[in-house]
Image (tube, rainbow, N blue to C red; front, side, top):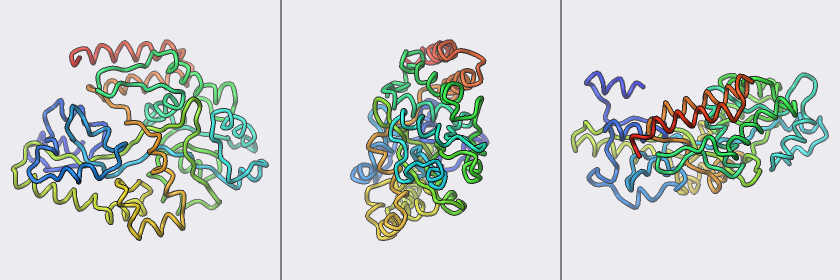
Length: 347
């Protein structure tokens, strides 16, 4: 927002880190320049990042964003609570069925087995569940959404069933902002959250914890997340060259390794994991590899033209279903109708 405010005020920044999913909107508003069009860009450099992290920035044959602060959703779990429930602390659930059965064993003494946040970024968690159920929620050209697909409706019904039928999760909504603290306080044995929380959990957990890839139903999967570097169009060739230099430095293997260790976000290139720093760190602390390993099954984060408004419709549908205001089918049908309206002009 600050970067866009600066643009509007006539004192624009030359570059910014913004959400990877902002790319369509930035292109639509003609605010950013494609990296391919910046003088001196090395094609080999563009190819040096993980392809899954480039997916949100690669649009219509050009590269608009360079990955920097990037994540996948991972499952954090409390090994002490697993032991107390008679579960193997080194075997977190790998399927939806296991997640439910383990969740039931872990739901006791006022604590829940699982919490999946449904405020903040509900669409992100929902996209993870949908892809695990075998269905993407959007096309890869930003023009079509599949919210009313029967498999997508079934996915939202499943999320709702975790609280209403199986009782392993609180009813209503689970707050994104307070979930990490709830996990650290033992209010839930498992939580789905960004790998960007990893270092904070590591530094603050008073118990033994594990990190796992998200469980599968039809398949494994998580959307990627986080921020990309963008270069704004209203910049001189000299400013673009300087911006490029800074971005190359910030995403260099050594810097990417340091950022990953400091935060829990992943190193954005295979070369980052070949640095001595990240090699040593991941040997001592293997959970730091989970988000990166999950890239094998990752998909681009939900993003379309008119992305904020389309996403808001989906977020509202998810919350309406989880709070029992509407059925999953009705809520998603409304979100789909709204998305069709918003995207019609771009097709």
